[in-house]
Amino acid sequence: MPQATAPGPTDGRPARRPRRDAARNHELLLHAAMSAFRDEGFDVALDAIARRAGVGNATLYRHFATREELYDAVFADLRDRAGAVLARYQAVDDAREALAGFVAELFTVGPAGFELGCLADRTCDATPALEAMITEIRATLQRLLVQAQREGTVRQDVDVEDLGLLLASARSVMAVAGEAAPGVWRRHLMLLLDALRPADPSPLPDAGVGEPEREHIGRVLHDMG
Image (cartoon, rainbow, N blue to C red; front, top):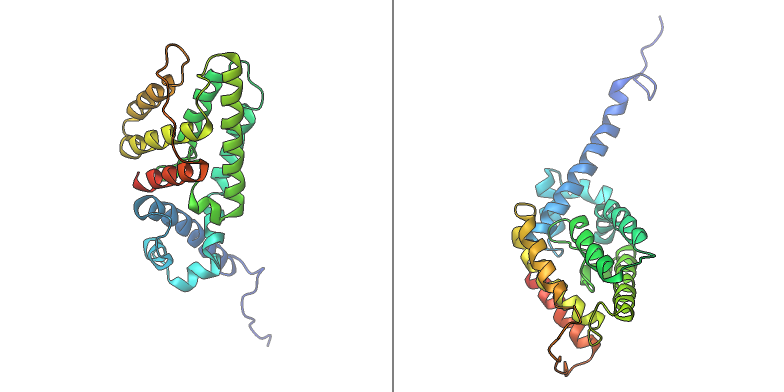
């Protein structure tokens, strides 16, 4: 009499269930991580993310051995979308209009709590792929700003650090308005960008500090938002 054999990889659905469960847990962890980052910040404990996902800590660490791996996985799609935005602004005719469009697109690409208008974020610094993306965003802002100044459509005494602080203010409004009232933060952003127009500007006082100190102020504003 032939002996019964245990189901193997080719014996049908039961053998594929662990793979389906692993994929489902992976998605649950990604969604839970994004939700936790939005609600509690990027320093949220990993076991809190596991609880949100309804899985154990061991399951989380099987999928993501380090916090940096989790960051990379959560923001992989975000990096792709941001890259598409960057590609659209490589060559522009009207730099001021492009600057406004670029900033607005970045704000809509980033989910609440991770707006890509951020010029210096400590979490991005901790993850090489995100750090490279933020560096490219900053370079694009700088290029568009300088081009607009050459075209005479942006005041000459503004630099990219001034722009970063303006965007930090807009992020605070976006954090409150979000998707529920997008017209509110878009309105606020347009008012801020209008401050860059060169017609009859008020002279800017000396900042009194260097670039590192101004970047630090921007990071503090981001954390407060």
